[in-house]
Figure 1 (cartoon, rainbow, N blue to C red):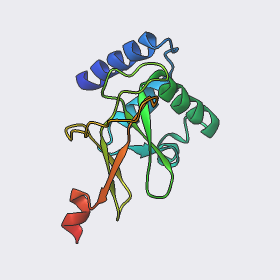
Figure 2 (cartoon, rainbow, N blue to C red):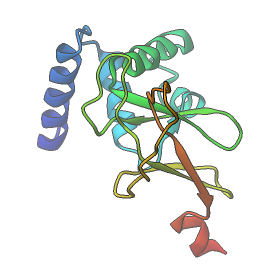
Figure 3 (cartoon, rainbow, N blue to C red):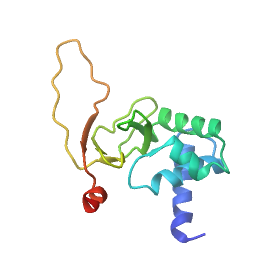
Figure 4 (cartoon, rainbow, N blue to C red):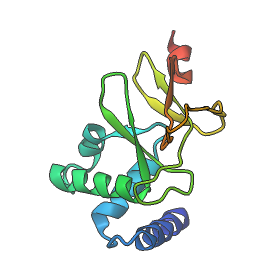
Length: 148
């Protein structure tokens, strides 16, 4: 195991413990796969990668618990498929603060979190409470632009 992999594994172990989750090989594997992707990843794509080691129901439960604890957030692609990305803010149980623009490529359907893009300030009518804000931008990602 490389030094980088060992350090990530320790970080993931701490992350799981901080969120009251048992440290298991399947959970560590899913975290490793999600963090190695530049774009958000769907459950079906994760299943293709880890399917020999983690069954569909276990994978679903892992993703649900990660989302519930604020470890990952869910973004829907253009086909309505849920994709998952690591939370980059201090998200907590059932309260996500990852409010940033998501870029969805209209060709390859990849979903990217654009943390560096500022969201506009939203002023709501009286007696409305904002819990989350999602803005999706649709266009061509860098890879698809190169191919066209």
